[in-house]
Image (tube, rainbow, N blue to C red; front, top):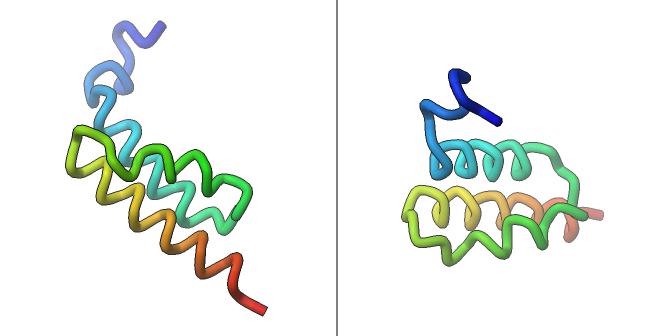
Length: 64
């Protein structure tokens, strides 16, 4: 599906890391379960991005 595209070149870990950052920046609290599942990912960069995103979304949910 991604043959010959930049997505194929960056690989799964960088793609998922970037998506986690996008989710964190989205402000969409409904996406929290998606990043929560990645907080223990085998790739440390993915897990770190997921924890960051989860924290951002937690802040959104607790805002008045």
